[in-house]
Length: 368
Image (cartoon, rainbow, N blue to C red):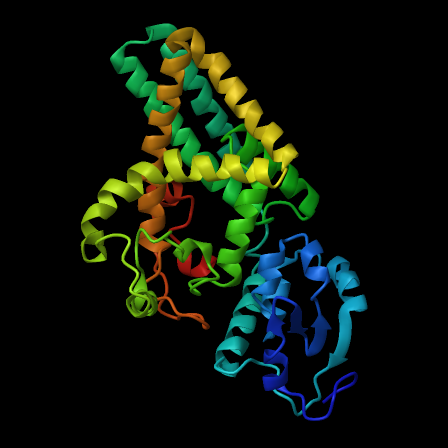
């Protein structure tokens, strides 16, 4: 074992430290004890806990734009280093694939593919605000009849879907060099333009990218017992004799539950409860600003009850858009308990419309 460790402690030894009360991880061949510090991790305790007992170099580099800054937090947590002869990769991981991935990332950096086009993101934000304005003008000028109401609803659903894709980019801290500005704009877009919570999204989405398609760790493959994905989950449900729904018909009832209910029912309820229960008061204030703006805008045309129904109809339309985009390239083709699947997702053909419609998530392989 290298400096700070005990003789004979190798890959299998660090794998033992993957418990709630005992968490080690490896970054650049250095071993860190993050047991107590994980609760203060800015990215959330679950993200870092998912790497307990594992090698986390690539994840560490990918999640932190300013590596020099975050390394300062690692120094007090250092407990040792791997000796040169000790394996740095976890069992089951391919050294060749890891090397290829790092070379690919270096090539992309050399080609300036991570360089942000700020005009592009400004235009995305501008066209969302323009749609909000067009929606209000439609009902203001043409009245609250059925046709103008439907047109307004579809325009607002489009702006909501596009705001969802835009907040995704800011939430990934991929627009500005300074994380601070990404967080500020992210809160504005997801909070004021959508009425949702940045912390709720970060908590779910960071886990998704930390452990994509890993059962019990990736929230995107936790279907709340409504759907069963992949062979591994089906086996587990079979052994435990879990049958909350007729899963042999899930391909049929998906159309009744997934697209129409995800955002207006599940997400809307979970977001509000998360902000209140976890006391995310800043996010709650941003969300309130969205609802205040929406109801002040549309109560004069539809009244209180009518505006509530109108809002949920917009969410209903947006939910179909969101679910079909994420279903076609986000929900996995394979999931497993403890390793990533190379056959996990797929891209959708590139075109101007597909790029816009999917928020560039048609490039899901590269994004993942």
